[in-house]
Image 1 (cartoon, rainbow, N blue to C red):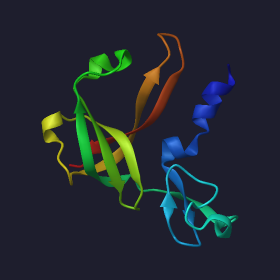
Image 2: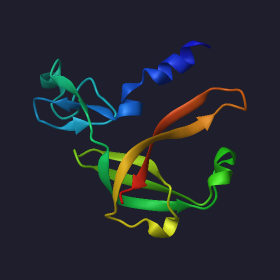
Image 3: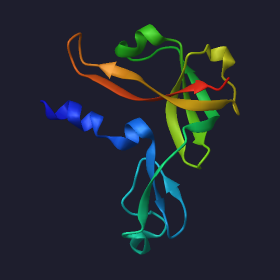
Length: 134
């Protein structure tokens, strides 16, 4: 069981938004990939890690009014498709705002937040969420 916290701590793409760029076609992927789905065999050994800035904008969103039991305290909450400045799209929760403040095209920035915990004394898992830029 001690390996689970280590897995989450060492998951670079989850905490730092690290993707991979195919140096063959210059496409950035998130989460990271070992092989580019466009270039296939030509991309082997040509995928390079790249950290994204965390800046993006809301491409689409929905307001969740009835969620799973572990998210009942957050209802209503906003889930969005965020287009990152570097190109990839991410699905993420928009936090620290009311659903009425969220609009398509709104600039957002990534932030590290608690995603869930396993019971009162269990493992706390963190991940990225987004906040509206001032």
